[in-house]
Length: 299
Figure: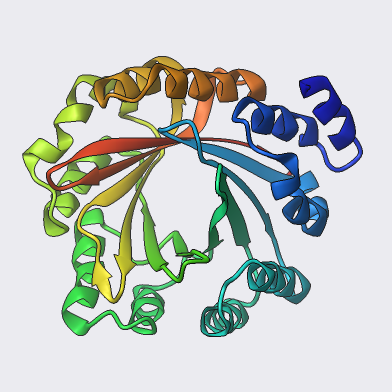
């Protein structure tokens, strides 16, 4: 089955065979992702990213591009997959304001089909722009102040990504990402910032045994807002993490053996020794969740 899928993908874009094999291993249909591949094949030749959540069931595919044509293709794709006019208009206004540059677009697919569409602008935008991004979706002044509070602790005057996740069921999430200097103090800063968004010492306990493996690596701290309010907690994205660390974290948080095997398979399929980055979602009074990412780029 995998050989047939690989051959059918071979002329689409660099890495299509790998995508087909991963879909097959997850029992996901290639045809569910075909419209995305056909719409963004040129961009996928330049940048492609695969991600897998900690259930080993939902897979993400992301690419990036520049220009009005790319942004309008993103909008049309979302429109044909159930995203309403208000959210499409918001995306296009944002894209125009940010000059249609450094736009990343991801789809997430599960057994029920396409479940989420996410877009990210990597523009090093000011804190003022980040506030406007959130205010446009109804976040109030009190919660907007969290952006400045976190930025001060993280020693940042800009944000790395402005992002949104749109679901066909109507759910809409807004995300703000901060990068961190690799100066030996990044984890101390994100721990303090975590206190501002509801995390306690207990929230970090799962990570304590892995601190050495996760330290001194690229680190991002992000916040998520939905329905005009902060969703308590934060996400950390850590660069260059090996499977041993990720697998132990997944085992600690009671992920299934199958999910761990799928996670390892993604790394083997990418022919890399480490994941390009791992996402760690921390919540108050809830287990940590993981997500792994690998990418290829000709930038």
